[in-house]
Image 1 (cartoon, one colour):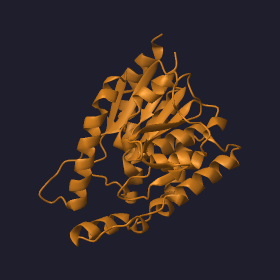
Image 2 (cartoon, helix red, strand yellow):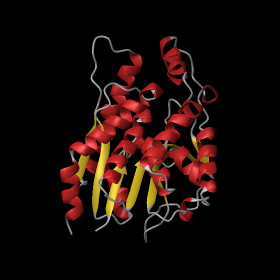
Image 3 (cartoon, one colour):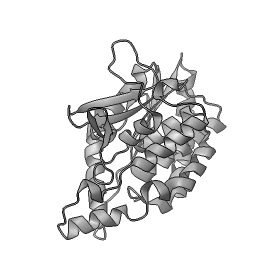
Length: 280
């Protein structure tokens, strides 16, 4: 029996996935297949590169400000409030993400997705053809995945959230965040060979009279994403929904909180996880 993990996008909340991995590691539950969208792709790739949960958490703490900076939300709010046109040049390029992951991968002896030994995939959106595109370490027969893309670009493309980062170019394609069409890639994990799939996603934050425009924007995104994900979630064997209590898309100061939230959520469901693992 092959166990797969489908990791959703969610901005900085994605570090909660590493918390889930920590709980699995402590209970000696090994993963065979990983599929991630957006921030979930970061965790999936780092795991496939051989990093444990604690190492992934340390990497996030080390590079979070370098990757997203601390003023992206201010840029977006400024554009919304004062009706300024926000051009591609006003967004973050995403290039630091690509360069960082390529550097980390090369230090481990890997370059493209097909070099990775573990079945792993990242999901992005092809803007031109208006369809999902999957970058994978293996291509099942008859499935239109790609495996010759650099690891860094696969992560960057999957997490090119359209109001924060520039689109990512790959050959004749223009790629955006995978969460537009498939935020919880349970189906991708199954296509890669998973018999059982655990899906990890995030609860939608509550809106109060004190909520600002960014809170409302995030709520809107969460609502759309959750609706799109319903079909994929139904195809999973277990859903771990992590409550990150109002953490914004780029709320870097909440990394520790989100990591712990993922860890505790996995522990709360550990009996169900173990029951899935024991099934043959």
